[in-house]
Length: 389
Ligand code: MN
Image (tube, rainbow, N blue to C red; front, side, top):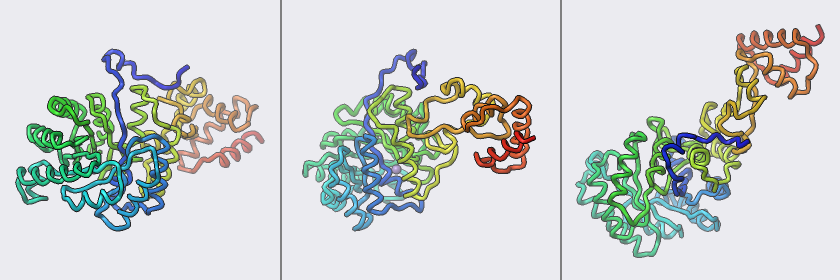
């Protein structure tokens, strides 16, 4: 039996799997997580691990930040990875020059397009920032590099203006145009609407989506954008990033695998990469975090554990091995006799009587109601006590 749960409704909708590529921005936006900073060695290790998973593009950093950052991006670009390496640049020729110095494959030039940003950040007018951005783009293209042109705060920008600047960027050779939901206000419905509007105008360059998780919808919006025809999806490992973070790499990849059968990424490396990013960034993963949280495959309820012992697909969307994780059974207040029996068999105890099992279930419940820890050593002690009587 296929242990991957398929979303049967997609067959009714009749959607074909989207053609996508991942641009992982853990090393750039992820590093902008409050308090986070990666060393050069950490960035190199993380880039290698992202490459092993098969992400197509790695955004390595923002070289104007410091000379070490610039050197780090250069080193990542020289690793000879399969992934293309991308570097961020403001709409300034000097930023493009520094990015070119790093020998990256792609330069991502950004300009904020919303009135809010133009007034309070640039203290300027749309026409002025538009010209500056397009001039920078042309300058980068004259050096023969692949250019992504990103509209920052695109989702608080009127659609006609967004079309205007993307069309102008396309005319000047932008290879990609990118919609950045900078403050994370899209919903799946508005994502679909926005993408269909932009796709109507932008024909030559590929679309990108960069979603933030301020309302907890970054992954949903990213997947919706892919289904609406966006090619390049931006992610970070564990969803780290500015404020509430970005769309999580592991969530986007699992959604693509389960919902659309996209099988080109090595998902079995996701759990260990998550732990590495947790360690390097200092940002702890919540236990209930999708995919990589410690509880993602932990089962406590008696009903659930008993069913899982029959067949794990009953209460798991996919098996933990797919992402390099392990299943665990937690004994606690909701544990039932059958579940306990399964767990005990697992631990090598085969011959407890029905009465002994019932007694043990009661002891376990009491124990957890008093908030006492219940690891396997403690459980072994409890079993011995009950068996002796
Ligand atoms: Mn961002």
